[in-house]
Structures are given as structure tokens and as C-alpha cells.
Length: 120
Image 1: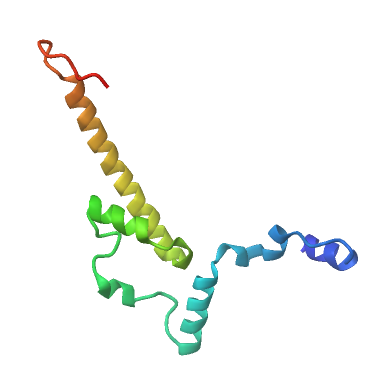
Image 2 (image 1 turned 60 degrees about the vertical axis):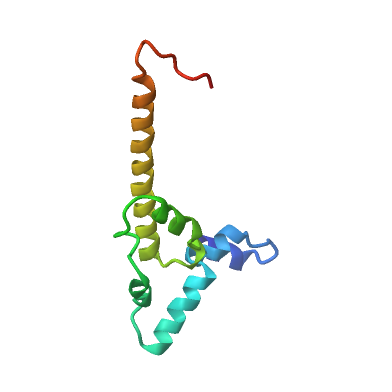
């Protein structure tokens, strides 16, 4: 509200983009468009059709397929709920990859004393 009064009392100063966007800055144009279309159609704000297209990100087991899906996802088009599930899936994938790395380091360090480790 303070920023509103400052702009109204001093219109000669340019409005900063960060303060002008306010809350709407958090939602991409794709999300705003989707929510508007859902509102006009009288449908819920959640996109239920994507659930019929395959395993949800929260149900996808960690591995190459989850990594591919995360890499190909357009973050700007996700609703806040979908973005939450995206972040959780990325965390599961990172934990899985860290487990693979730890196993590989354990095997590398457990080289028998008779053999030498390959030079890197």
C-alpha cells in the first residue's frame, strides 16, 4: 500500500518493474491463461487431464525416465500444485543419483591391495 501512495503522490518517478508486478509476477502467463479458461468454463483450477496421460511425477520411480520427464517439463506452464510435485520428484531423483555415486565411490575405494586403481 505504501508503494501505491508513493506512485500516486509522485507520478513523475518511473514505477520499478519488481514492485509493479506484485503478486502476479509469481504466475507465468501460461498459468494465468489456464486458470482463466478453467474459471470461464466453470471447471476446477486443477488440470485433471494430465493424470490420464501416464504415471504422475510423484508415482514415477527414480531413474532415467524421471530425469527425462523433468528435463522436458516447461516450468512456466506448471500450476503451483504441479510445481510442488515437480520439486519433490527432482529431490527424489537427486537422492537416487547420490546413492548411485556413493555406491560407485565405495566400489572404487574397495579395490583389492594387489591391484592398482586406474589412473584418471
